[in-house]
Image 1 (cartoon, rainbow, N blue to C red):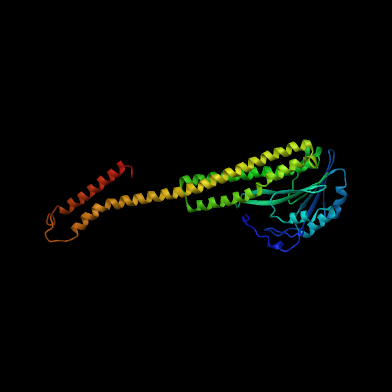
Image 2 (image 1 turned 45 degrees about the horizontal axis):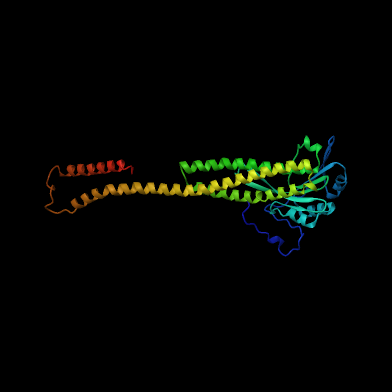
Length: 342
């Protein structure tokens, strides 16, 4: 998982609008697929370069251009042929963008964060999704959705944009369910047997929640702005769905804050559990030491080896002294149990 603070030194000194890839993984060459549809027809194809997209964008059908890979040269070519502002091209290849929305003359550009949970590594993986919404077209980068049929075929590009946003937001709930299960497991470990590994798990989960919060929290503002832009890009009947996604986003944010509070509380519980465990150990050692104090006193007296000490010449002296020491030990143990110290 990416660190909280990430360097962007590659862009230092460059003028605004200069596309420079910023990310953890090496960018893949762009792979472009085009989906055109209306109520009665559906066509999907793969194109080799951006120049082949122009005719599709001029079609009266709804066109979805889906781009995989963020190779800078390919993104610049696509942006140039489609007339996208250089700042959009710059933001697409900068995978460290926070969710946002920018409004242009004939289209809007917004950035989302798609979050998935890797079952094998138990890590949260965050991927940037960039979407450009025009009057009858959508261009998306990195994200791919298939099998979107039914009502989507009857609606416009704005409803397709809503579907993409809704799918990303629904993915948050899946990730949070996985994290919730892990939080419960850590909570059980704290109650039964807190270990140093448990502390590491708590810190790892806190880092994951910070990364998720950083990716999700700005989304509320993005969807709110998209709703306000409804008069331009989103039709009135689609605005209802956008507001529904906004409600889902609020639920996700509430769940994130709840888990963050739980993890912070778990850290306090861990420290308290360790402290209580140490107190129990110290209590047992103190009781053992207290029991041996009188026994050590008696053994110390008879270890002085004076010639005329009492009972030195008595045949039953040694077993009698052992019996006295055992009796003292039993009395002290009974006293400690009565006081519930044992």
